[in-house]
Image (cartoon, rainbow, N blue to C red):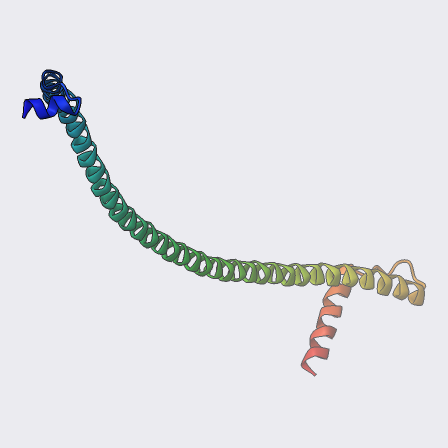
Length: 170
């Protein structure tokens, strides 16, 4: 058989050496290249699967957070509406209070004005009485044409008051 290999041009010593070299190269490559590469690929695969799991967890957390945010926005909107409603109620109450206070103040001013008018009326009547008494006194002096007759202003004022009372009674 060796001769048959030699006849076709194959050197068996060279063939065995190449076969040993191939087996050694295969063992070396398997031990130093294939195993580390396989290990790196396995690590990478586990990292990828872990990253995918983490991404799923993050996505689930994101959905939860979005729901929480939506709920908080709804709660904030409800609180805002409640605050606005309360502010409107307070505004209405404050407006009513201010209206009531303004009405009371106007009533006080009107009452004070009425008192002032009554007081001024009394003063004006007193002044008019005094002037009427002076005029009547002067008129009586002229009529009497007597300087010796002294007409008392007080007597005339009393007489005017009696005349007023008589008019208001009658």
